[in-house]
Amino acid sequence: MKTLLGKSYPFFIFFFLLLVFFIADVSYGSVYIPLDEVFNILLKKNTEKKSWEIIVWQFRLPKATTALLAGAGLSVSGLLMQTLFRNPLADAYILGVSSGASLGVALLILAGVGFASFAGQWAIAVSAVVGAASIMALVLFIATQVRQLVSLLIIGLMLGNGVGALIVILQSFSNKEELQRFANWTYGSLGGVDWEKMLILAPLVLVGLFSSIFLYKPLNSLLLGDNYALSMGLNIHKIRIQVILLTSLITGCITAFCGIIGFVGIAVPHICRYLLDTSEHKRLLPACAFLGAILMLACDMLCQLPYSPHVLPINAITALVGVPVVVWVILRRR
Image (cartoon, rainbow, N blue to C red):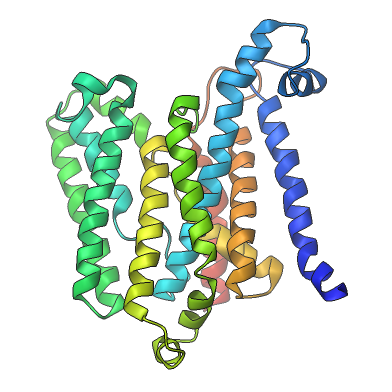
């Protein structure tokens, strides 16, 4: 019993911090709302101003929920990729899925192709989903043809570079307004998801997160090498496909609705390994989900300048947090 409580103790702390940062993110913004009024709004009690209810329910609560889902999803995806490739600097975007989402958005915004004519506010999200799904299907097909993970890694990087080249070509034929709109999407934003879009984002990300938990035993075996995994009777090819599929699903969905958010998938798994002092995926997977969500909520608050309508790009804040962690990892492994 004492051992069980000892192992569960960090997760009680993570859960408490998650609640604190979630409430803080909902409370913090350009419009000051007292904390007691925030609780009244969340509990659907009478409040001093009706406008505060609109701000909390229609803007801040969806944004904080998006931050929670994006942080958890990208962190778990990063852990899956680092384990699959046995590479400490791998992350969720290494297979080019985010590049596919970027190409879909680029075709819509820069070339005027896509779903803008009938999708309305869903145009960018739908185009990003189609682009990410296309690259995901291509990567899955390639994964069935190659046996070496290094080959798959190189092909994923080449796909990302090739798609990036196509985007640069599209940008060279675009006007300033189109370039600015596309650039705004690439910076990443958590504020573009309303409750209608949340009905798609939340189930897909949650399905991916819960499904990854059932892979903890194969992931532990992969850490010890392919030969060990084979000796344990695991179908390495099947596990590889499942990991790629889950990572692509989570990453593609988050990128479609939030844009590209870097460094979270690299940094959080290393922080969790350091804090828990373990490589056991049964503990690392939920720890990455908790800590990734906490980190993204904190970054979302840092994006919001106090008492100002201006919001900094989320990608810039996550980079400032993630870069020191990546440098630390490299120095530790020298």
